[in-house]
Length: 230
Length: 109
Image (tube, rainbow over all chains, first blue to last red):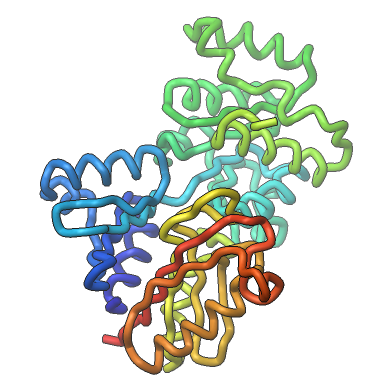
Protein backbone atom coordinates (compact mmCIF):
# COMPACT_ATOMS: atom_id res chain seq x y z
CA UNK A 1 0.00 0.00 0.00
CA UNK A 2 1.05 3.56 -0.53
CA UNK A 3 2.27 5.69 2.37
CA UNK A 4 -0.36 8.24 1.36
CA UNK A 5 -3.07 5.91 2.70
CA UNK A 6 -1.48 5.91 6.17
CA UNK A 7 -1.28 9.71 6.05
CA UNK A 8 -4.98 9.90 5.13
CA UNK A 9 -5.89 7.52 7.97
CA UNK A 10 -3.87 9.57 10.44
CA UNK A 11 -5.55 12.78 9.28
CA UNK A 12 -9.05 11.28 9.52
CA UNK A 13 -8.36 10.13 13.08
CA UNK A 14 -7.08 13.61 13.98
CA UNK A 15 -10.19 15.16 12.40
CA UNK A 16 -12.46 12.67 14.22
CA UNK A 17 -14.09 11.52 10.97
CA UNK A 18 -14.91 7.85 10.26
CA UNK A 19 -13.26 6.22 7.26
CA UNK A 20 -12.33 2.80 5.89
CA UNK A 21 -9.66 1.18 3.77
CA UNK A 22 -10.69 -1.30 1.08
CA UNK A 23 -8.25 -4.01 0.06
CA UNK A 24 -8.97 -6.15 -2.99
CA UNK A 25 -7.43 -9.39 -1.73
CA UNK A 26 -7.01 -10.87 -5.22
CA UNK A 27 -4.96 -7.96 -6.58
CA UNK A 28 -3.58 -6.53 -3.31
CA UNK A 29 -4.62 -2.98 -4.13
CA UNK A 30 -5.72 -0.85 -1.16
CA UNK A 31 -7.86 2.28 -1.32
CA UNK A 32 -8.70 4.89 1.35
CA UNK A 33 -12.36 5.96 1.48
CA UNK A 34 -13.53 9.07 3.33
CA UNK A 35 -17.21 9.45 4.34
CA UNK A 36 -17.93 11.24 1.06
CA UNK A 37 -16.19 8.56 -0.98
CA UNK A 38 -18.15 5.82 0.84
CA UNK A 39 -21.40 7.47 -0.35
CA UNK A 40 -20.23 7.11 -3.94
CA UNK A 41 -19.67 3.31 -3.79
CA UNK A 42 -22.03 0.83 -5.48
CA UNK A 43 -24.98 0.11 -3.21
CA UNK A 44 -24.05 -3.43 -2.08
CA UNK A 45 -20.52 -2.36 -1.15
CA UNK A 46 -21.76 0.85 0.44
CA UNK A 47 -24.17 -1.13 2.62
CA UNK A 48 -21.40 -3.50 3.70
CA UNK A 49 -19.15 -0.54 4.59
CA UNK A 50 -21.89 1.28 6.50
CA UNK A 51 -22.75 -1.86 8.44
CA UNK A 52 -19.06 -2.42 9.28
CA UNK A 53 -18.74 1.19 10.51
CA UNK A 54 -21.96 1.01 12.54
CA UNK A 55 -20.90 -2.20 14.30
CA UNK A 56 -17.25 -1.02 14.52
CA UNK A 57 -16.23 -4.36 12.99
CA UNK A 58 -13.85 -4.79 10.09
CA UNK A 59 -14.80 -7.61 7.70
CA UNK A 60 -13.88 -9.45 4.52
CA UNK A 61 -16.82 -9.49 2.07
CA UNK A 62 -17.45 -11.11 -1.30
CA UNK A 63 -18.22 -8.60 -4.06
CA UNK A 64 -18.63 -8.72 -7.84
CA UNK A 65 -14.91 -7.94 -8.04
CA UNK A 66 -13.84 -10.73 -5.67
CA UNK A 67 -13.05 -10.80 -1.97
CA UNK A 68 -12.60 -7.35 -0.46
CA UNK A 69 -11.41 -6.50 3.04
CA UNK A 70 -13.10 -3.52 4.71
CA UNK A 71 -10.97 -2.16 7.55
CA UNK A 72 -12.94 0.20 9.79
CA UNK A 73 -11.32 3.28 11.29
CA UNK A 74 -13.90 4.96 13.48
CA UNK A 75 -12.90 8.22 15.15
CA UNK A 76 -11.05 7.77 18.45
CA UNK A 77 -13.18 7.37 21.57
CA UNK A 78 -13.30 10.55 23.61
CA UNK A 79 -13.61 11.05 27.36
CA UNK A 80 -14.60 14.35 28.95
CA UNK A 81 -13.75 14.50 32.65
CA UNK A 82 -15.23 17.36 34.67
CA UNK A 83 -13.11 18.09 37.72
CA UNK A 84 -9.30 18.02 37.64
CA UNK A 85 -9.34 16.22 40.99
CA UNK A 86 -7.14 13.39 42.27
CA UNK A 87 -9.20 10.57 40.66
CA UNK A 88 -9.03 12.42 37.33
CA UNK A 89 -5.24 12.02 37.28
CA UNK A 90 -5.09 8.20 37.06
CA UNK A 91 -8.39 8.06 35.11
CA UNK A 92 -7.08 10.34 32.38
CA UNK A 93 -3.85 8.34 31.99
CA UNK A 94 -5.62 4.97 32.01
CA UNK A 95 -8.19 6.18 29.48
CA UNK A 96 -5.37 7.26 27.13
CA UNK A 97 -3.98 3.72 27.37
CA UNK A 98 -7.45 2.37 26.52
CA UNK A 99 -7.53 4.48 23.34
CA UNK A 100 -9.45 7.58 24.42
CA UNK A 101 -8.70 11.19 23.53
CA UNK A 102 -9.14 12.77 26.96
CA UNK A 103 -10.19 16.31 27.86
CA UNK A 104 -10.24 17.48 31.48
CA UNK A 105 -12.47 20.46 32.29
CA UNK A 106 -12.02 22.55 35.44
CA UNK A 107 -12.25 26.33 35.82
CA UNK A 108 -10.06 26.16 38.93
CA UNK A 109 -6.60 26.80 37.52
CA UNK A 110 -4.88 25.38 40.61
CA UNK A 111 -6.34 21.96 39.71
CA UNK A 112 -6.09 21.91 35.93
CA UNK A 113 -2.32 22.13 35.53
CA UNK A 114 -0.14 20.34 33.00
CA UNK A 115 2.10 19.16 35.86
CA UNK A 116 -0.83 17.22 37.27
CA UNK A 117 -2.09 16.13 33.82
CA UNK A 118 0.92 15.68 31.53
CA UNK A 119 -0.09 15.36 27.87
CA UNK A 120 -3.81 15.76 28.60
CA UNK A 121 -5.98 18.38 26.90
CA UNK A 122 -7.05 20.81 29.66
CA UNK A 123 -9.92 23.29 29.41
CA UNK A 124 -10.02 25.95 32.12
CA UNK A 125 -13.62 26.99 31.63
CA UNK A 126 -16.91 26.46 33.39
CA UNK A 127 -18.32 23.10 32.31
CA UNK A 128 -21.37 24.56 30.51
CA UNK A 129 -19.16 26.71 28.26
CA UNK A 130 -16.57 23.98 27.91
CA UNK A 131 -19.04 21.25 26.94
CA UNK A 132 -20.81 23.54 24.48
CA UNK A 133 -17.45 23.93 22.78
CA UNK A 134 -16.61 20.20 22.67
CA UNK A 135 -17.98 17.65 20.21
CA UNK A 136 -20.02 14.96 21.96
CA UNK A 137 -20.80 11.91 19.80
CA UNK A 138 -21.92 8.30 20.31
CA UNK A 139 -18.21 7.55 20.96
CA UNK A 140 -17.96 10.01 23.87
CA UNK A 141 -18.05 9.28 27.60
CA UNK A 142 -18.67 12.06 30.16
CA UNK A 143 -17.58 11.65 33.78
CA UNK A 144 -18.11 14.29 36.46
CA UNK A 145 -15.88 14.09 39.51
CA UNK A 146 -16.23 17.36 41.45
CA UNK A 147 -19.46 16.49 43.34
CA UNK A 148 -19.99 20.25 43.38
CA UNK A 149 -23.43 21.01 41.85
CA UNK A 150 -22.16 24.28 40.35
CA UNK A 151 -19.65 22.34 38.26
CA UNK A 152 -21.22 18.90 37.80
CA UNK A 153 -24.86 19.82 37.09
CA UNK A 154 -24.31 21.94 33.95
CA UNK A 155 -22.06 19.21 32.55
CA UNK A 156 -24.58 16.46 33.30
CA UNK A 157 -27.33 18.58 31.75
CA UNK A 158 -25.29 18.84 28.49
CA UNK A 159 -24.41 15.13 28.60
CA UNK A 160 -28.06 14.09 29.06
CA UNK A 161 -29.01 16.14 26.00
CA UNK A 162 -26.31 14.39 23.94
CA UNK A 163 -25.90 10.93 22.41
CA UNK A 164 -22.81 10.09 24.49
CA UNK A 165 -22.54 6.37 25.26
CA UNK A 166 -21.68 6.74 28.95
CA UNK A 167 -22.38 9.22 31.74
CA UNK A 168 -20.86 8.72 35.19
CA UNK A 169 -21.06 10.99 38.20
CA UNK A 170 -19.07 10.67 41.41
CA UNK A 171 -20.91 11.00 44.68
CA UNK A 172 -22.56 8.94 47.42
CA UNK A 173 -26.09 7.57 47.06
CA UNK A 174 -27.34 10.57 49.04
CA UNK A 175 -25.44 13.05 46.87
CA UNK A 176 -26.68 11.28 43.77
CA UNK A 177 -30.29 11.32 44.89
CA UNK A 178 -30.14 15.09 45.54
CA UNK A 179 -28.46 15.51 42.15
CA UNK A 180 -31.26 13.65 40.37
CA UNK A 181 -33.85 15.90 42.03
CA UNK A 182 -32.00 19.02 40.82
CA UNK A 183 -31.64 17.64 37.27
CA UNK A 184 -35.34 16.75 37.26
CA UNK A 185 -35.92 20.44 37.94
CA UNK A 186 -34.04 21.17 34.69
CA UNK A 187 -36.63 19.10 32.82
CA UNK A 188 -34.99 15.65 32.60
CA UNK A 189 -37.39 12.72 33.09
CA UNK A 190 -36.66 9.57 35.08
CA UNK A 191 -35.80 7.50 32.00
CA UNK A 192 -33.22 10.04 30.83
CA UNK A 193 -31.76 10.41 34.33
CA UNK A 194 -31.29 6.62 34.49
CA UNK A 195 -28.48 7.09 31.94
CA UNK A 196 -26.31 8.52 34.72
CA UNK A 197 -24.18 5.90 36.45
CA UNK A 198 -24.16 7.06 40.05
CA UNK A 199 -22.50 6.22 42.34
CA UNK A 200 -19.97 5.94 39.54
CA UNK A 201 -18.01 2.82 38.61
CA UNK A 202 -18.39 -0.94 38.99
CA UNK A 203 -18.76 -2.21 42.55
CA UNK A 204 -15.31 -3.76 43.03
CA UNK A 205 -14.62 -2.26 46.43
CA UNK A 206 -12.29 0.41 44.98
CA UNK A 207 -10.75 2.69 47.59
CA UNK A 208 -7.75 4.60 46.22
CA UNK A 209 -8.10 7.14 43.40
CA UNK A 210 -6.40 4.75 40.95
CA UNK A 211 -8.69 1.88 41.97
CA UNK A 212 -11.75 4.08 41.54
CA UNK A 213 -10.40 5.04 38.10
CA UNK A 214 -10.21 1.31 37.25
CA UNK A 215 -13.84 0.82 38.31
CA UNK A 216 -14.96 3.80 36.18
CA UNK A 217 -13.00 2.71 33.11
CA UNK A 218 -14.37 -0.83 33.53
CA UNK A 219 -17.94 0.50 33.62
CA UNK A 220 -17.26 2.67 30.55
CA UNK A 221 -15.94 -0.42 28.74
CA UNK A 222 -19.02 -2.42 29.69
CA UNK A 223 -21.25 0.38 28.35
CA UNK A 224 -19.25 0.50 25.11
CA UNK A 225 -18.86 -3.20 24.39
CA UNK A 226 -22.05 -4.65 25.85
CA UNK A 227 -22.88 -6.86 28.77
CA UNK A 228 -20.32 -9.37 30.02
CA UNK A 229 -20.63 -12.72 28.23
CA UNK A 230 -20.38 -14.85 31.37
CA UNK B 1 -4.42 15.99 22.48
CA UNK B 2 -3.10 12.84 24.08
CA UNK B 3 -2.55 9.87 21.79
CA UNK B 4 -3.43 6.29 22.39
CA UNK B 5 -0.53 4.10 23.52
CA UNK B 6 -0.84 1.94 20.41
CA UNK B 7 -0.92 4.48 17.63
CA UNK B 8 0.16 1.91 15.04
CA UNK B 9 -0.36 4.09 11.96
CA UNK B 10 1.48 7.01 13.56
CA UNK B 11 4.41 4.77 14.53
CA UNK B 12 4.66 3.35 10.98
CA UNK B 13 4.76 6.87 9.54
CA UNK B 14 7.40 7.89 12.11
CA UNK B 15 9.58 4.89 11.18
CA UNK B 16 9.31 5.76 7.51
CA UNK B 17 10.26 9.35 8.29
CA UNK B 18 13.44 7.92 9.83
CA UNK B 19 14.14 6.20 6.52
CA UNK B 20 13.14 2.69 7.65
CA UNK B 21 11.16 0.23 5.52
CA UNK B 22 7.78 -0.60 7.00
CA UNK B 23 5.04 -3.21 6.54
CA UNK B 24 1.59 -3.48 8.03
CA UNK B 25 0.01 -6.83 8.97
CA UNK B 26 -3.79 -6.98 9.43
CA UNK B 27 -6.12 -9.71 10.73
CA UNK B 28 -8.49 -10.31 7.77
CA UNK B 29 -10.57 -13.18 9.09
CA UNK B 30 -10.74 -15.41 12.16
CA UNK B 31 -12.35 -18.82 12.73
CA UNK B 32 -13.12 -20.21 16.13
CA UNK B 33 -11.38 -18.80 19.16
CA UNK B 34 -9.01 -15.99 18.17
CA UNK B 35 -7.21 -13.61 20.50
CA UNK B 36 -7.48 -10.40 18.45
CA UNK B 37 -10.49 -9.26 16.39
CA UNK B 38 -10.57 -8.77 12.62
CA UNK B 39 -8.91 -5.47 11.69
CA UNK B 40 -6.23 -5.69 14.41
CA UNK B 41 -2.87 -4.53 13.12
CA UNK B 42 0.83 -5.07 13.63
CA UNK B 43 3.28 -2.50 12.24
CA UNK B 44 6.80 -3.79 11.54
CA UNK B 45 10.01 -1.99 10.51
CA UNK B 46 13.08 -3.36 8.73
CA UNK B 47 14.89 -3.90 12.04
CA UNK B 48 12.15 -6.25 13.20
CA UNK B 49 10.75 -3.75 15.74
CA UNK B 50 6.97 -4.00 15.94
CA UNK B 51 3.95 -2.15 17.34
CA UNK B 52 0.42 -3.51 17.95
CA UNK B 53 -0.57 -7.18 17.64
CA UNK B 54 -2.40 -9.71 15.48
CA UNK B 55 -2.60 -12.46 18.12
CA UNK B 56 -1.79 -12.96 21.76
CA UNK B 57 1.88 -13.25 20.91
CA UNK B 58 1.52 -16.71 19.29
CA UNK B 59 2.35 -15.78 15.70
CA UNK B 60 3.90 -12.31 15.85
CA UNK B 61 7.40 -13.77 15.43
CA UNK B 62 6.41 -15.55 12.22
CA UNK B 63 4.50 -12.54 10.90
CA UNK B 64 7.52 -10.28 11.48
CA UNK B 65 9.64 -12.69 9.37
CA UNK B 66 7.04 -12.61 6.59
CA UNK B 67 6.88 -8.81 6.82
CA UNK B 68 10.66 -8.51 6.43
CA UNK B 69 10.39 -10.67 3.31
CA UNK B 70 7.50 -8.54 1.98
CA UNK B 71 9.60 -5.39 2.46
CA UNK B 72 12.35 -7.01 0.33
CA UNK B 73 10.06 -8.10 -2.49
CA UNK B 74 7.58 -5.22 -2.32
CA UNK B 75 4.77 -7.80 -2.63
CA UNK B 76 1.80 -8.11 -0.29
CA UNK B 77 0.81 -11.60 0.88
CA UNK B 78 -2.07 -13.44 2.48
CA UNK B 79 -1.11 -15.89 5.26
CA UNK B 80 -3.11 -18.53 7.09
CA UNK B 81 -2.26 -19.62 10.62
CA UNK B 82 -3.88 -22.41 12.57
CA UNK B 83 -2.88 -25.13 14.96
CA UNK B 84 0.08 -26.91 13.50
CA UNK B 85 0.54 -30.59 14.44
CA UNK B 86 4.24 -30.55 14.99
CA UNK B 87 5.12 -26.93 15.51
CA UNK B 88 2.17 -25.63 17.48
CA UNK B 89 4.46 -23.92 19.93
CA UNK B 90 6.31 -22.16 17.14
CA UNK B 91 3.82 -20.62 14.74
CA UNK B 92 0.47 -22.16 15.60
CA UNK B 93 -2.26 -20.89 17.84
CA UNK B 94 -2.49 -22.60 21.20
CA UNK B 95 -6.12 -21.49 21.48
CA UNK B 96 -7.14 -23.76 18.57
CA UNK B 97 -8.39 -20.92 16.37
CA UNK B 98 -7.42 -20.00 12.82
CA UNK B 99 -6.41 -16.58 11.56
CA UNK B 100 -5.87 -15.10 8.13
CA UNK B 101 -3.34 -12.26 8.00
CA UNK B 102 -2.61 -9.80 5.20
CA UNK B 103 0.95 -8.49 5.16
CA UNK B 104 1.41 -5.36 3.09
CA UNK B 105 4.65 -3.41 2.59
CA UNK B 106 4.15 0.36 2.85
CA UNK B 107 5.61 2.02 -0.23
CA UNK B 108 7.38 5.32 0.49
CA UNK B 109 6.03 8.13 -1.65
